[in-house]
Amino acid sequence: MTTILVTGSLGQIGTELIPLLKSKGYTVISTDIRKPTDTTVFDPFEILDSRDKERMRNLVRDYSVDYIIHNASLLSATAEKNPQLAIDINIGGIQNVLEVAREEKIKRVLSPSSIAAFGPNSPKEMTPNDTVMRPNTIYGVSKIYTELLGEYYHQKYDVDFRTLRYPGIISAGAEPGGGTTDWAVQIFYDAILNGKYTCFVDHDVRMPMMSMQDCLKSTIMLLEAPQEVLKHRSFNVSGCNFTPEELTEEIKKYIPDFQIEYAPDFRQDIALSWPKSIDDSVARAEWNWEPDYDIEKLTKYMLDTLKTKLTKQDI
Image 1: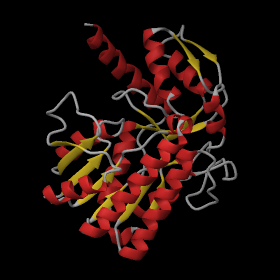
Image 2 (image 1 turned 120 degrees about the horizontal axis):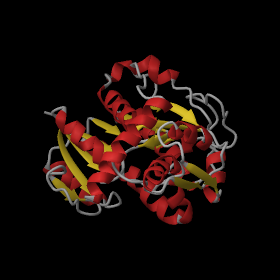
Image 3 (image 1 turned 90 degrees about the vertical axis):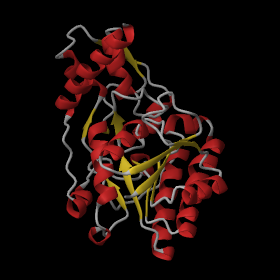
Image 4 (image 1 turned 60 degrees about the vertical axis):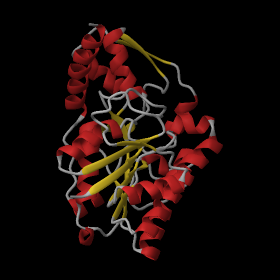
C-alpha cells in the first residue's frame, strides 16, 4: 500500500484531494500549519511547516512515506502583497521537499505549478507547453523555480518529480484563498446570496479555468502515470477559458436578475500577464489527459452545489 504525505492539506485542493486519495486505497498523511476542524477526514494528521526540513524528514521516516504531494504555497495575490514571505514559503518549501526526497529516496514527488509561471512575453493564445517563461510576479517566479529545480533533481538525482500548471480552480468546497482567479469562485457565492457581484478584473479579461473535478482528475492521472510514458516533467492542463462577462451570461440562465459591476484592482495587471487559453496537447499525448467540464457544465454544477451548501449553512 502506497503512503502519501500531503503538505498544505487544508487548502482548496487538499481538502478535496485527500478524501479522493483515501477512496482509491492510498494511505494519506495529512499535514498543514494549523489543525483541521474535521479530524476524521484528515486522520492521521500532523502539524508541518514545509520550511521545517527536519520535521518533514522525521515524518517521512516515521510513516515510511512513498510519495510526497507538496501543495503548501502562498497564492498569487497574497504573495504579491508579501514577496519575502512568498520566497520563504514557496521556494524554501520545495527545496526542502526535494532534498528530503533525495535523501530518503522518496519514490515520487508531485508539486503543483501554475499558469502564473508564464509571463507577459509568453504567447497568450493556446500557450504551448514549451515556450518562453518569464513571469513578473513572485508567485510565478516561485512556480518556475519549482519546475526547474524539480527537473534538475530528476536529471541529477533521479527524483521522480512531476508538476501540473494549474489554471484557475473552480470549487464549491473550500472558499477562495487569495488567488488572482478567485473572482471565478466568489461570483457564484455572491450571485446566490446577493444577486450581484463586484469583480476585481474587467469584463473582457479571458483566463483559463478548470473545475475542481478536473483538477483532481488530472492530479491523480499524472500521479499514477507510469514513468516510462513521461517525456516531460511539467505539464499544461486546462478545462475551459472564459471572461467575467461570459460567465455572467451563463449564470443569468439560472439567475436572470443577476448583476455584475467591475472595479479592477492590482489583480487585473497580474491576470493580464497570464495566458488567455492553454494548449495542453502534451499532457493529452503523454498520459491521455482530457477534461470533463466546460463552462456550461461548470456553471450548473457550481450553482446547484452551492445552493444546497449555503441553504444547509443557513439552517
